[in-house]
Image 1 (spheres, one colour):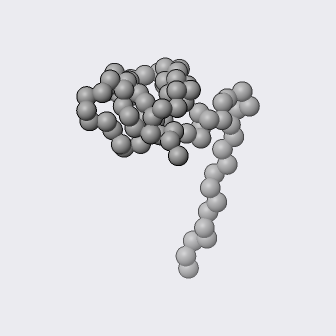
Image 2: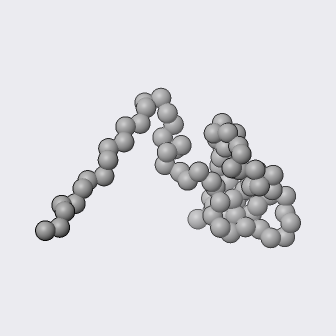
Length: 80
């Protein structure tokens, strides 16, 4: 007899946390990178240094990048 389906675990988020931190992907990358040696990627809006060092950035540094690229709104990531 097959096992009954199990429900997903409940996740409780602290009230003082910004929900967008949990709702968005870790990286702004959308897989459409500029390949013309631009200083800023046309796909995600990050600089070449931010892209290459993303895994080494702290959560606060990543948040600052997300804030900047969101406010600029120029990257393809934000075009609809």
